[in-house]
Image 1 (cartoon, rainbow over the protein chains, first blue to last red):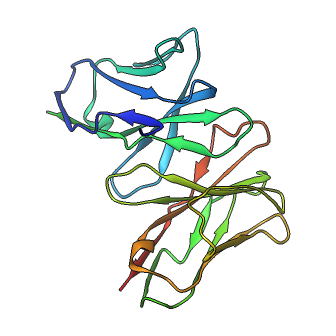
Image 2: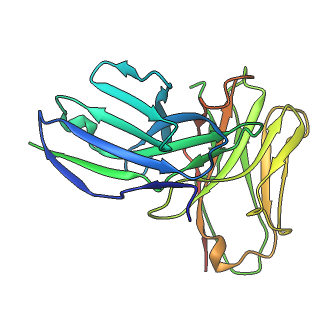
Length: 110
Length: 114
């Protein structure tokens, strides 16, 4: 079983729509959680951290459910520029290397 | 540009040859990471340095791989006796102390082993 699992997509979504991705993780000792964004042929970049109480950054909302071991990302009023691969990332306690999911490919259509 | 830089950006080599990649992190960052990414996969952690000390190694880092960060600034990743399965994008990242989740990635070195 992969440590971090995501639906690879692609998700084809019309501009202006709301889209949500989920990710599950297997290690219950996981400590910190993040969403990274990776554009085609570019390096990953931190999109946002995910906090237990849920957090919002503009059009983006991230939530964590520790009991069910899943993380979600919601994008409202999607823009063409949101087209990218969204990587779910987990950090284990006591380790600094990050564990990435395969990523979910999002395509926003005009 | 004060971001993470990596050289070379592309490397084509023949199976069995040795290759070395360089990473220059953001200057204020004392932590440096190496990852490998293949098509359709997320980055996979290889190893991590805090200053010049190599503190963590993944089981993916076989004996043919070695990484150094001799003065706590730039780092090198060497692959000996390359195999076709080593073909991948090798990504370097750096972070501030205590903020390991916020890693800044370089553009990567794409290795092709023929």
